[in-house]
Amino acid sequence: MGERPPPDPVDYDLVIIGCGIYGSQVARTYLSIRPGRRVAIFESSKTIGSVWSRERVYEDFWTQVPLSILEFSDHPMQDVPQEDEYYGFFKAKHVTMYLEEYCRNKVFNGQPLDSRILLEAPVQRIYKDGGFWFIKAAKSGLPTLRCPKVPDLPNLSQFQGTIIHHKDFALLETCEILEQPKGIVVIGGAKSAADVVYSRAKAGHRVTWLIRKSASGPAYFISAKGMVGSQNSKATLYTKLTSLFFGSIFAAQMGFNRISRWINTSEIGVAVLRKTWQDFNARALAEADYDRADGKENGFFNLKPDTEFFWQNDSTGIDQRPDFLDLIARDTTVV
Image (cartoon, rainbow, N blue to C red; front, side):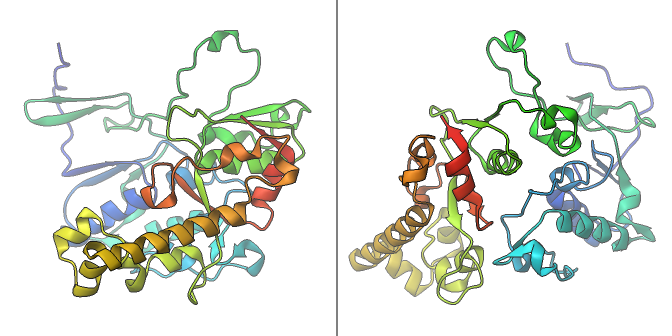
């Protein structure tokens, strides 16, 4: 039996859950077309930004998207200090400040975007009835957002240590828990796990990194350095030239141009395509050097991706600090 709608529901034209990069842009795009519509944005944190919010950003949290690509087209990002930038990648705190400024300055129908944001608002329940979505909320009769849940793990009740979700890492980073000289175990193979591993290894902790092989495996970390004259690797991939080598279903639907069609369908073109991606893959593996001598005892080789980068079966990340993989190889046990 589903829940009955409340007797006096509050009507909105659009409800957005989460005010990070995508949530703020959904609101901006919708309000640019329909500025007079009622829009509510619900954010569980105390400040906007979601993963980029002030309480979730920590010193060793860096972006894996460069300045030239991350900023919105209608609002340039201010210059980042040189010490906070590496081949165009930069510290996440600058994304936080940028999003806050963006939401303050975007005005629709006389109201800034941030006036439509409800903070500290975790969702309790969402259900559908009679063609409408109803969001059971506890704040001013409006819907709120539910916090991410720690994954269910077998025998969790027997664990004697402290469990911290990535979303709370910034809040607890200076807490006594993380200052105690105890071992830390990080579970998961994605970019967020790698950032936590790096942060704790750099702080001198004994870190064990657990990655479940039955899932997608470890993330694919590519170099921050660019190729063919690009400032960084992201800029290399996001150009008209490299777009010819992405024969996705989306490109097919939009219609290949002659060069792209030749590369993706002819015998010679496919051979060029295969060789290009093999070289890119080999370059990434060589720079990471997963079989390095100083990482053999720590199992650093376990971070080697299971498939080639072209297939994107694993998550991806950027080696965006000069000592990123070196520190993990020396001071982290990877299982």
